[in-house]
Image: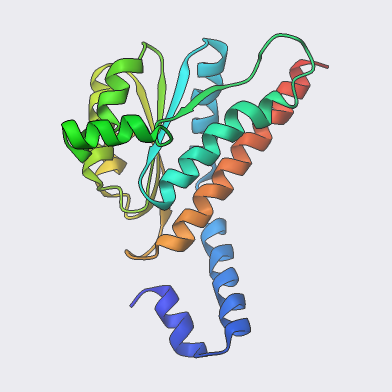
Length: 210
């Protein structure tokens, strides 16, 4: 029984009480975040910006939506804060967003290669890869991360549960440690991590322009 099961079993059909219990649990998970790992992620992402490298983002299901969100935030949300005419934003690309490419690879090859084959086209030395996964075990994410590391790229893992296989592959694993099956809270915290990082990016850009 995971923590969400316990909250529901203790509260029953009282929706307001369940809502409060869910939020209280999120607060507990937030307090357990390893902020030094988040700082390591920022270090690598800033390195990518300074060297004009690409930050690729991948994930499945709800994590694919988070990948799209990150692709928007790292690029455009930061760009809005840029006052100078030159583009000082982060070059971020969510590999979850091109339906033609995803369906072509899935149809012509296998679903396991939907991110790997895109990376084979776009990867350049010095690039970074953010892999988002609650379980850390999705075969298409593992395949992409392993190949990326073999090319000398840096893998940042935003994970859940026990981190799965990706915990040992990632150069920087940020793990929302929780019982297996608690997808929603893990995905919630991945979005929080995104907003922590993108907000830091915005302040960093503004500080550079002072």
